Amino acid sequence: MITKFYNWFNLHRGEENKNKVREDVIKNISFKGANLWILACAILIASIGLNVNSTAVIIGAMLISPLMGPIVGSGFALATYDINLLKRSTKNLLIATAVGFLVSALFFYISPFKDVQSELLARTSPTIYDVLIAFFGGIVGAVSITREDKGNPIPGVAIATALMPPLCTAGFGFATMNYKFVAGALYLYSINCFFIGIATFLVLKYLKYKPIVTKDEAFDKKVRVAITIMVSLLVIPSFYLAYNLLEEKKFVQNVEKYFKDEFTDKGMTIIYKKFSFNQNPKRIDVAFLSEKFDSIEIHQLNQKLKQYNLPNTKLVIKQNNSDLNNEILMELQANNTIEGEKDIRIKQLMTQINQLNLGDFKTDQEIKILFPNINKVSFGKTNLYVSKDSVITQTLLTYSAVNKVDEVKLRQWLNAKFEQDSIIIIKE
Image (cartoon, rainbow, N blue to C red; front, side, top):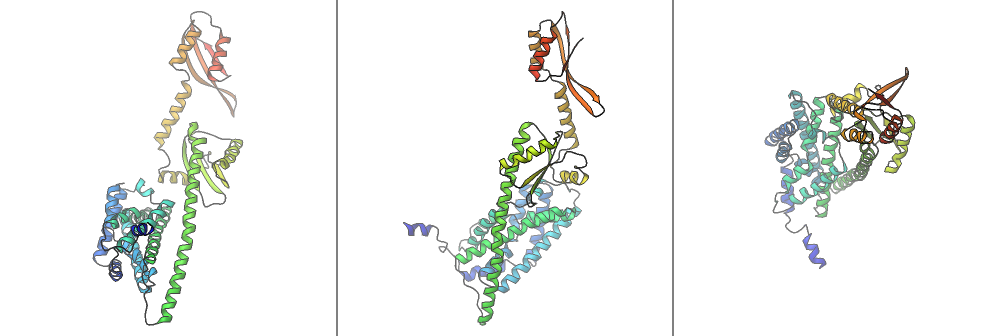
């Protein structure tokens, strides 16, 4: 039974000749002539797709991109201690990256459309999912190149690992001088390259690809030691990187739940939010459409963070004009996290209308049933200016009646109905 189970997962079955695999890998790492033209065209197609926010066009660009070649070559070189192949693969990957970056930057510089689309935003900050996709996609790619029957996983790997879009997004950031986009997108691109290469290295080690040897045993030993140290320096930080991204994902999920429970579900409109996970303490900046908080309320909200598994975190509520400065407003606009002035004005007007229209048809009917003498009623708001800096908003009810109405009873009913004590009653 165990033997049968092993045979199901035996990667040595259907394995291609190792020398043939090596030849195929070497053939695909070069970026000269046709490969360079294909890369440039793929970059342009991906840039257009990002520019018009078309997922289908972006997928098409990823299918024709030859970027996987030098990354797989680097993993192959590390697994076989081939220092010359590692140099060639690294050199060609750098050439491909530079060409892709410059071509996309030139396109976005020329393009009249420089809006930040959702497809661009999705490539500016890596998550733990990007690490997992790159790693498992790299495993699939490495397994595929070692098969006699290659099948069709490679195009799927190219789509899943998404090397082209972050590179183009970096070009967009450079063209629009948004260097935060450049840093985030290149970080995502580097993570994809790194974990594809590591996955390739592990698969080839599992398949026991033999190291390259020369007649100089001392040189071979130095190469093995150097590459072993290099791999260790690459792999060990990868665990920390993956763990850190996982913790950041948990942090964001907990913050979103906190926002939902404490703000959104209570009818508050958030117009700006920013999470700073790598600070000490971690920081959450938020601004609201109209809500204001005093120091006691802010302290209580900070205390509640621990209930959402958010220790060592500080909540900062930006509620002054000086807090929402031009820099923040520009960031809001760039990241599409702020509503347009028109939308905000509509919400403000709706809030005012809701405050003014305290009564409805049902309330009118209730009043006329309880107080039959009343034949007309209307509600509103009035401001009582106590001093220059003190204003009290009160509910105002005006009515007309055929005969005398017991206003004491009417006031008691209104106080209970609207849970307010400062209701002004005026007879027309």
